[in-house]
Length: 380
Ligand code: PMP
Ligand code: GLN
Image 1 (tube, rainbow, N blue to C red):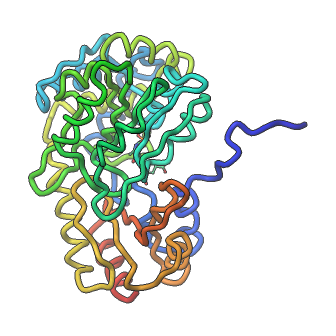
Image 2 (cartoon, rainbow, N blue to C red):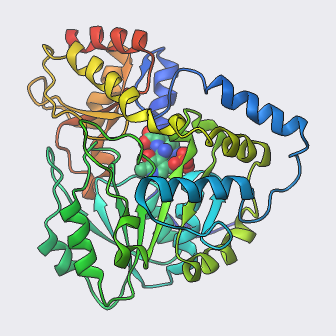
């Protein structure tokens, strides 16, 4: 049988590639972003309780209502922004499904979607499988600052959507309030939909603030926010996330969502809803991860890697240009095989595989693992 691939240039995601290589070589795995410590016991217990209490059949299509109410409360508390639980919030199978479904619901053949590179790797294939055209804007290490005149020059009558991501994976940078205001100015009086990927909203360091798109009313009116409980509650394997948007946009989203997954794991949703009634469960994350970032960076301060401390996310980018001029993919693979430490090369997220000689390390790990990893990094 012959068929023409809809994604001829797409191979296996780098996260699977590097985790498999780490396992094969028994390397410390700081590549794919996931914690190596347990999901909170209290949350696990609440999910088990939800199963015992009968939350074992389909959740409502838009998500368990207690969870949607907990999400509404969070946006009111943190950003003084209201999303109606009935019509403006949908629970999804991780942020990945939310992102895919948003793109499928709106992007048609020939539509242009602007993304900033390095870009998280699920955006571009979702655009292209739906017939859209990716318009990349390449940002450069180490600051990954946006040139807003360049963004203005990339807008056209075909621009359907822009995808933004702050705090940013893989660079660990965050957008300023000014960036958001520039975005607001550029999109005003257009029909552009903004997909704001905010999965790391609770992981921002050094007293800085997360500028959620919902704090900017004009932007909010054209935007989806995507979020991931896997990131916030240390259980990426549960694959529960959600998205929020004004009612008219969410109605279109749900037309696809209902046939894409219909609804997602019910006991996990109910357990998370109950767990979130204590806001400390997510408000303490900044400090928790800042301690890990600082521990990791102090431990490697006299290594040959150079760095700007991550401003958000649980990733730290390290510049290895003083060590070798190998391509970052080759170097990441060699470190895994020879030094038994796995990381993610940033070039795979760049336009044309541009290599800035930087690797991404995940510090969502036990302190013991971070100490062991640093001992290796200091030998390189
Ligand atoms: N967006 C970004 C920027 C991510 O890093 C991730 C990975 N966690 C996702 C989306 C997907 O999140 P989830 O695991 O909830 O699907
Ligand atoms: N978001 C995770 C990361 O950036 C990976 C998720 C995945 O493996 N798809 O490492």
